[in-house]
Amino acid sequence: VLDLGHARTVITLLGPNARCLLSKVVAVDTRAEAFQARTFVQTGLHDIAVLIHCKDQNAFDVFVPSTWSESVWDLLALLRAQDGQGHV
Image (cartoon, rainbow, N blue to C red; front, top):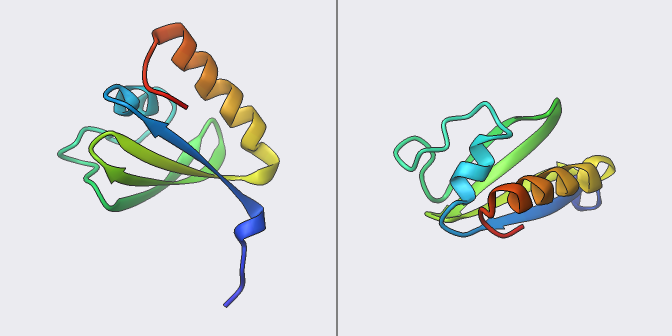
């Protein structure tokens, strides 16, 4: 077992519009029928490899390499502010 906990940062998206916000930055079908609770997908978010955990209907954990976490946070916060969707 190799602990990589220090290599990743978790950004949590919460709220009824979290799926919509997520759909704007990943090439994954984020509809509830396709991305169900308690499942994971690995994808790219603006060319950054991320792992996304759908915790429940309106809650997602986005695991981001620590070196990119601030950039991803800023992008998600900007989109949320522009659209008023979800909480980062």
